[in-house]
Amino acid sequence: MNTTEQTPRDASRSVVVGMLFVGLLFFILGFVTWLNGSLVPFLKIVCGLNNFQALWVTFAFYIAYTVMALPAAAVLARIGYKKGMTLGLGIMGAGALLFIPAARSTHYELFLAALFTLATGMTLMQTAINPYIVQIGDRDSAAMRISIMGLFNKGAGVVVPLVFSSLMLADIDSFSHTALATLEPAARDAMRATLAERLVFPYACMAAVLFVIMVFIHFSNLRDIPPDADDATANVERTGVLQFPQLVLGALALFGYVGVEVIAGDTIGLYGHELNVANFGVLTSYTMVCMVLGYVVGVAAIPRYLSQKGALMVSALLGLVLTIGVATGSSQSSGIAQVLLGWSGVPLVPDTVMCLALLGLANALVWPAIWPLALQGLGRYTAAGSAVLVMAISGGAVLPLLYGRLSDASGPQAGYWLMLPCYAMILWYAASGHKIRSWRGAGRA
Image 1 (cartoon, rainbow, N blue to C red):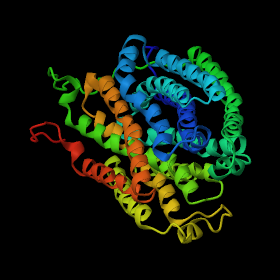
Image 2 (cartoon, one colour):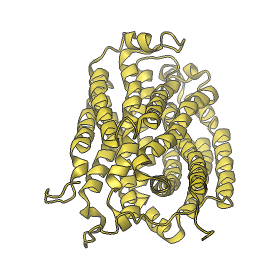
Image 3 (cartoon, rainbow, N blue to C red):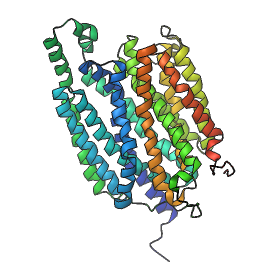
Image 4 (cartoon, one colour):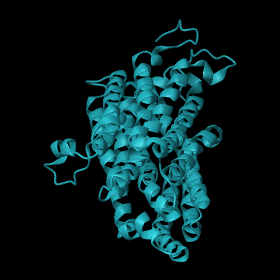
């Protein structure tokens, strides 16, 4: 008997251990990512910005995924998944430390540089852990495993706005635009500097935690896995990874998806602030709770009751309906929130805000459904394909910024029409786009 072979029980244990380690990393990614939803309105006050300028926060953060994805793939090819995760944590820690001089100077450009550095480390992490979680077990249940990781990621998104609000947004009314406008320029700058100083301690703590986890992962027993070889017959041409339509179209769908996900999570606070909603800094938690519920559905239903394709179609259709609700609904009535949340004692919000939060439910299963569909059949191109999909996260840079411009030009509510074509693209990819195997349109799965 070959004692080096894993028994089914050992293999199952290895998958569980790997998922626990990666789950911790997904929680960290979620914590840093969804902090932006509260950071956007906070920096809008600190730096005296309009909506378009404030949403450069999301641009600086998510554009790093486009700029750094291919270098990250090259680094991973050289050092492997595990060391790549360790390096990513170290870069994230450096980005967190940059927030200290940014807060003490209140220079918006330094905040953006710190966010770009944080996201650079996260790009390396994302490029490693997403294919890792796909390949660590059976591919048919990959969306279920990614959904479990989503629980960690979006669970952090529920917690972060609540923590940020309690630490950063206490007595925020005294820093409102109206209150600041009554002050002399020197006094106004002093008030903003006082508010910005609140960022120093939390980000110093974040840096320390990231460095500790970096050391923990480095010395852990997390196993590396070989490159995906499930499809050795994949056709290899000089066009490289771009020869796969299911990947390229999947990246376009992900571009739109990440854009609407970030709009739903990171602009809801801005929109609530425009509507004078109390505790606008915690509204991202509403969206994240809906996403967590969506991931619970994914864990329970995929693949037993719902295929990855079916989950993607349902998500896109729900996104279309809710987008119309956001763009055309009432910003005065809170009837939807009364029906859904009235029993819970949670503060009620206007219908349009509630529809925006419910987009979290529509968005939850899109990411875990697209990844395995887009990577199917790539064989030795899987790592490069993962980098292409990670580059699509730049949708979170471009689309919220475009929303900010539309919001300033035509009103915050009308700007949400931008999401409609994004969900239409996701629906088409779910229905037929993922089946295309040739750019000539002849080959289908």
